[in-house]
Amino acid sequence: QLVESGGGLVQAGGSLRLSCAASGSFFSIGVMGWYRQVPGKQRELVAAIPRGGSTNYADSVKGRFTISRDNAKNTVYLQMNSLKPEDTAVYYCNVDVFTGGWQDYWGQGTQVTVSS
Image 1 (cartoon, one colour):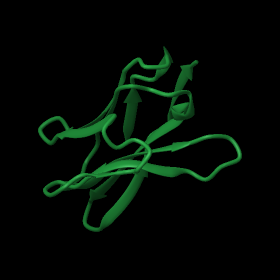
Image 2 (cartoon, helix red, strand yellow):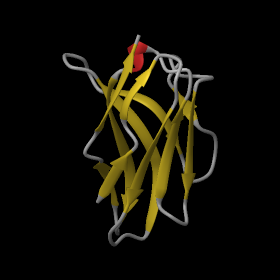
Image 3 (cartoon, one colour):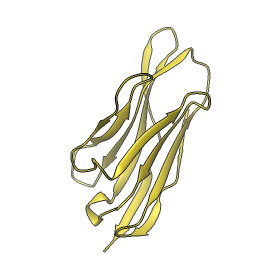
Image 4 (cartoon, rainbow, N blue to C red):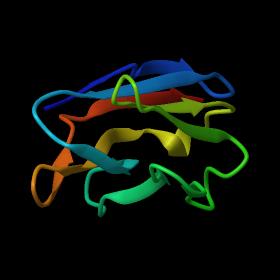
């Protein structure tokens, strides 16, 4: 189970921090990531972080967003700074979990709205 928190309404230029905590029975967590979706468009990758190795960001958020993870807490974070109206979307976390085989899980989604 993935539980997201931290979305909301913020003015342009402001900041928000999203969290996504994984719970349940599993052996390991692999890649953790954040996606976003606006109505009528495909869900797009915002940022991803493997258990070890370099992070990956969409060009539109580079230099403004930072993804991090706390493996002890099975939690992934997305620090969003210098927010723009075009960042408005539903944000979903995505986690690869090993339970004997790798499985892909999605959070319930959290709304981020940036006003101009």
